[in-house]
Amino acid sequence: MKVRSAYPGLSRSLLAAGDQFITFELMPIMEIRHFRYFLAVARQRNFTRAAEQLGIAPPTLSRQIQDMENTLGTRLFLRQQREVSLTEAGATLLLEAEATVRQFEFAQRNAQRAGRGEIGHIELGYVASAVYCGLLQTQVQGFGRDCPDVSLNVRECPMATLPARIADGRLDVGYIRSPMTLPEGVEAIRLDAEGFVLALSDESWLCRLPQIASEHLLNETFILPEQISGTLQVAAQGAYAPKLGPQPGGLVAVLALVSLGQGVAVVPESVVGHISLPHVLYRPIGGSSATSWLSLIHRRFEQAPAVVRYIEQVRREYRGKA
Image 1 (cartoon, rainbow, N blue to C red):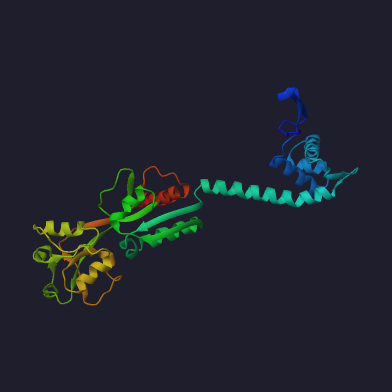
Image 2: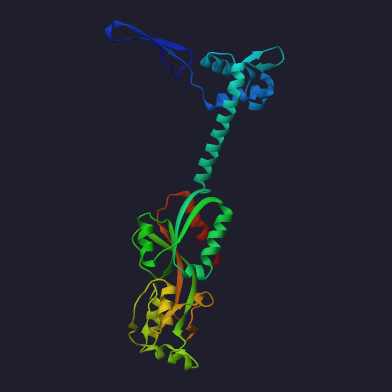
């Protein structure tokens, strides 16, 4: 019985069951460096030139090639006085060795690139206002230019679900409109801030006013977007409790109810010029200082290199603006 081992040039006998000796012939294992040595000699057709290319001594190279031949049980080179040539076995190995080294280098580069976050995959969720203000496009496209081999799956999500999806790993990063309570382990990077405007039906009595102030909205029904902080801030400025209407979902759904005359809505300024529905007008709210801001949320101890790279790119951009 013959058993191969990683210890070249050694053999030993062991006492087995039944007092029979089994001889183990310990054979060397070829490593990727052996293929590199073989390829250098095959290309240079000379041990001295190949050794110089590899940065090792010619006797060392010769010994390594001999080890390969011993392991394979066949000669790879026909040795002549000034140069060498491939045997049929060597010519066959040449193609496989080239493919093996090429695949090894490819795997090595990809592992290194993955570790730097240059390849990988990111699941990204967002709220619609991140698109209307152009922030999502700017950041995703900028990251895509820097890391073209990272794939991103980008999808709109109900804002109330985004923090939990980040926390449980269904999403990697998300764009929300703050302020918003986040679960433990999820952090936010504060991004662009903007004010609010009032969306109202073109048949509303408010359209006849030269300027709409928060106190004019005392008896109005507020259709609620996903982020209601603007509505609450406007009402607080007018010193009244707002009459809260339905919260239908995204901004288009909110504005659809406004167009039907079911109420008014306090919405981000960025929707002006981006969402145009029949019978919907946008007016500034006089004297209002209500604001909100977009945030990028992510897991606090993110480990995936591609996701970390995206987070750090956004953080650097806004650190520079601070």
